[in-house]
Image 1 (cartoon, rainbow, N blue to C red):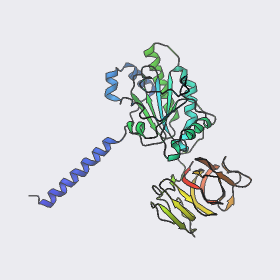
Image 2 (tube, one colour):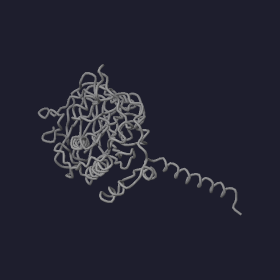
Image 3 (cartoon, rainbow, N blue to C red):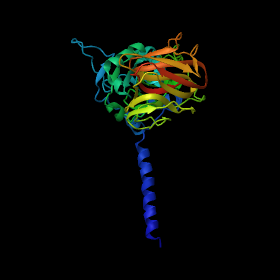
Length: 380
């Protein structure tokens, strides 16, 4: 007979296995159309009841704090937009994004092109702006980003993550395609798969045309935005690096995940993908703020492009060195090339290095005055 220890062990193992299956059931699913011609025919021949067994119903926008690019009322107030009012009329692409995310910025040219190309065929895009950082909750910041990136489709502010949670989302960016009957029949996480996503859009627009009897011919050519930035997924790239105490696990010469002031010494050896800092820094949940002049950030990265999310109250000039030298042709668009410096002030992403090829290099940021708030490094 099994002894009591074995019985307890079996109970524990069963509980663990059960927990794994339960947690897996909570993960967002990615129902996808399985091929243009077969899927087009299959979708067109499915009833709403049949679709409901295969695809989840679209969720409504929830607890929205602001509307951008929607019609204004006579009093100048933005008119709310809802998923419900579009079902039965439009094909809807819901795009979760946040404006300081470089992955989102690289996706935006495709969204803009699709909106211009297919809006008259029945496509509506709704950008759901769910902020990663506190400063991204400010409507004026989002409005400036919408203008800067030429976004014409409606954007809503999901500051409390209500819509994000309704879709069980976990990623920036993420696209959900909703058919005319209100079902999420395709979604894609992150950048890429642009041809695949556009093919799904055309399939759903064709289905819409058939249902509404418009007999519209959907354009078949693939969109190639002239201002899109290509990223080679096969090349080594450093992971996203966080400065704030909530997520600064890559900090190499200080105490990670600890809020408060630390005085850090410049390291004698710099390891790849490890964050080093010099000077007195005040670590808060989202960022680290320099408290002394001539503080430094040192990071050996892999990739082609390097981006920095930062801010300051009055503007802080930062000198940029790569492998001990001033930047030349690889200087990003936010860098003053002649001086190899960048002025950090507004709450946003700054393009520090935009190189022609991938490689491994050591970046140094020398902060002339106190007051720089550092949030993240990201790479392309």
